[in-house]
Length: 160
Image (cartoon, rainbow, N blue to C red; front, side, top):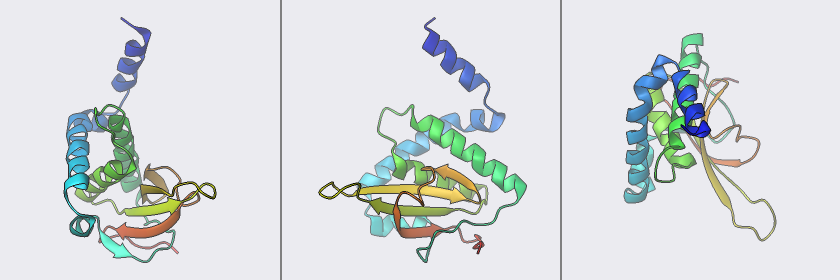
């Protein structure tokens, strides 16, 4: 057996039960969200992302169990995004994470941002999800992108 395959099997075997249970559903959900992004206008999609909130870097407050769940959701979404035959970039990952966080009633903020690296370079767009101190998808993007839109779960409490 090739060493890479052995390493991948060992990595999956070490994952918690939560990740094991969500591997196939998340893989399918990444495909569904990717399809929706290409077939549904953003105007019709954005009401499902959460409540539109003021554009200011913030993150909702979490309990310890919610924080652990957010970490698990981020882990399984990022892991499965690597194994889709389609490009599961930041937007499908963010929407998939939003769906799972909503399912588990974990407060979240889904953010959209833009940046331009250098003059003359095309603008880059990015989507990310934060929940408490957890960067669920998209990494620590508040420092790298100018936030242009934010959507929060209905039960998110703004930490100031």
